Image (cartoon, rainbow, N blue to C red):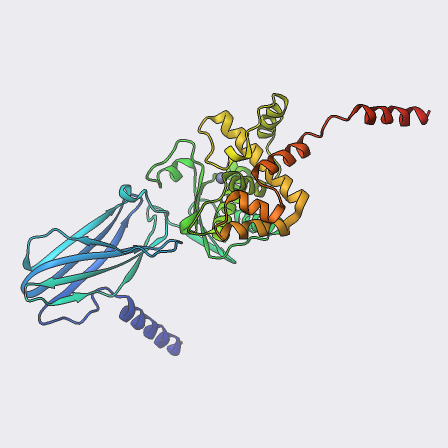
Amino acid sequence: MIKRTSILAVVIFLFLTLFSPGWVQAQDGLEILDSSAQADFPTRLNFSLSAESDVNITDIRLHYQVDRIGFAQVTSEIYIDFVPATAVSTGWSLEMIRIGGLPPGTGVDYWWTVGDAKDNRVATDPVRVPFDDNRYSWQGLTEGMVTLYWYEGNESFARELMAATQEALGRLHDYTGAQLERPARLYIYANAQDLQGSMIYPQEWTGGVAFTRYGAMAIGITPANLDWGKRAIAHELTHLVIHQVTLNPYCDLPTWLDEGLAMHSEGPLEPVLASYLDRAIAEDSLISVQSLSSPFSAYAGEASLSYAQSYSLVEFLITSYGQGRMFELLNTLREGSTYDGALEKVYGFDMDGLDALWQDWLIPPEPTVEEKGMYLELVGAGY
Ligand SMILES: [Zn+2]
């Protein structure tokens, strides 16, 4: 027990040594006394600093980096506006409205540099502050690469959602070969209102959202809509996985593939969406694969048909050509290939070719006169 305590003490000491802001050597009287950061979720992240010197402090800068999946690590440098003095306490707020908001738990690394009138300069060590949604008391449950956070409902509620999450990951792997490459954080809000209250630009209809560049997703689930919640988790989680495995600096995914895979993870196509597809077939008003490669229409009817068609296109590719080709398609897109180029390389047809083959699969051609005749003869021969 004593040994454990001393190990803990060493760990805490190391932690403080490595990560405490202001753990810097004072330089010729210039010293940082205190530095901290606090989340005011979802609106802002507040940074504060106090420093003193023998002469006036003349220059204070805050530097920060937001932890996200990307290719270039961007460091922002903020020149703090203050009145020069020998003792300064100041601060700065990162207003989320300026950057479109951050999902809960996003890490922000920050450090300060301070200079005085004698040209002394000191810097704090970088510290990571999590932008947590501290308005709720979250509990966490981790399995594999996924950590699920929730604050309402008992543990069996969380375990049921985690089981659905793992099942969805397994299904996705089975039919695409894709799996999480980085940890994912899943925030379960108690309902849609709470979820929307966590966002900077909420839409009335937002029930779930995937923050693909942050490895996070947030969904509002009440025990009464558990089944919907499981589908929503499967959908958003698929966006996370697919974006991780296709990430490249050159191009995005075609929307029909991204949404089609997400819908496929949910399970069978919902009857209401299937009816949109049936009607479009009957009325000969299907949307082209080319059009479905761009973001979907904002009009509800056209959007529903777009989702239904995307599901069907993915279903066609997987049932006709298998998991291996789908995995190859995702990998080819990761290399930055064009949509036509990737399809051509993996399947031997481009978007127009896919359109034609898919429609043949969806709508079997009318039998020819000869075929009809043979059919009648065979039936006739039996009696
Ligand atoms: Zn989606």
